[in-house]
Image (cartoon, rainbow, N blue to C red; front, side, top):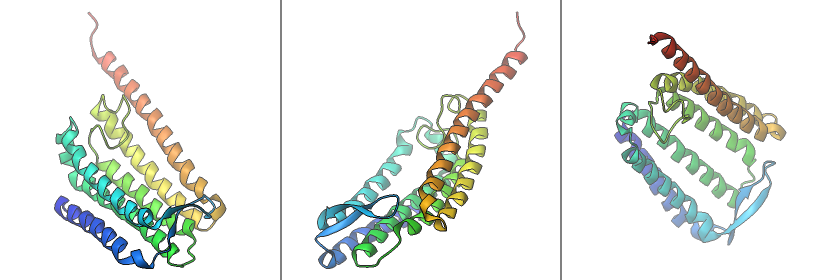
Amino acid sequence: MSKKIYLIASFLIVIIAFVLAGVLYSSMPDKIASHWGISGEVNGYMSKSWGLFMPPAIILILFLFFLILPRLDPLKKNIKEFENYYYGFITVIILFLFYIYLLTIFWNQGFNLDIIRFLIPGFAILMYAAGVVMAKSKQNWFMGIRTPWTLSSEKVWHETHQLGARLFEASAIISLIGIFIKQYAFWLLIIPIVLSAIIAFIYSYLIYKKEIKKHDQATPSL
């Protein structure tokens, strides 16, 4: 799909979120469950106004923020090269936040959802989408694995992001196991992501050092 379609889809999701907040306002309880612990128990509440209207406002602010970022990036021409993936990922983020918002609404409407099990597929899709856009990304200052070494070399950026893409996609698949063993769901989500980030960080350094060594060997000494 094109950038235009992704932007329209994202904007419509934002509008729908605000419409839902207005339509459901009178039917929601005065205090809304808004936060759950890693075991799925409610451990945070908000007033009805904040609980209904703050999430759509956050989604809108993030949407505008992501629209502005390419204009601020000194390497904006590179973002242009993978802009369909960039804006597609924005739509996935907006959908993910809207999905969480819907789960909150259903819970507060009396549906006894197992929040953790419902959240896992959303996180898995988000991580997998991050892997997809990572594989297509070019050097930029705001999205991707931004280390001193990836920002110093296009080759290091490319190789690091190819590995990072596979790691994040694998992490997304591993996280789905948490649907079946809920007591480990949090760790099956967090540990693969953290390990993927650490591995990609170290790999970018090693590839950079390898490139420097090859460059020094190819440069004749005087």
